[in-house]
Length: 91
Image (tube, rainbow, N blue to C red; front, side):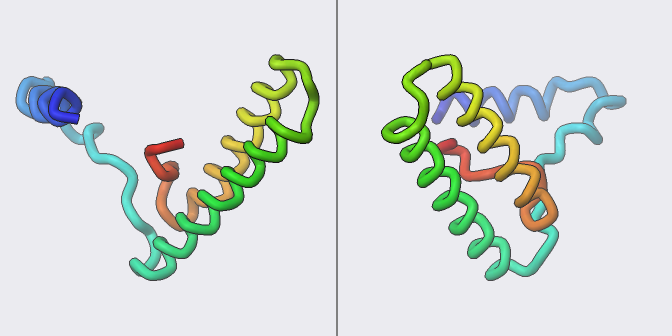
């Protein structure tokens, strides 16, 4: 975590001026309660989906990876209107 913070600070300090406007991250586009509820629901949905795919889904590792990737993209797209193109960093 310390290395990540150091990297972000170094990037913010030494990035060329013409690229500094690109360093902003996702921003909440709704009120804080709605964003928290959306993140909680989306995290629950992706966790449940991953558990279902791993334990009850196909046995092929390739298909499992494909389905998990598709589910992740779907949840991120669904939540992008609430919290920007992000989801819980644990994901």
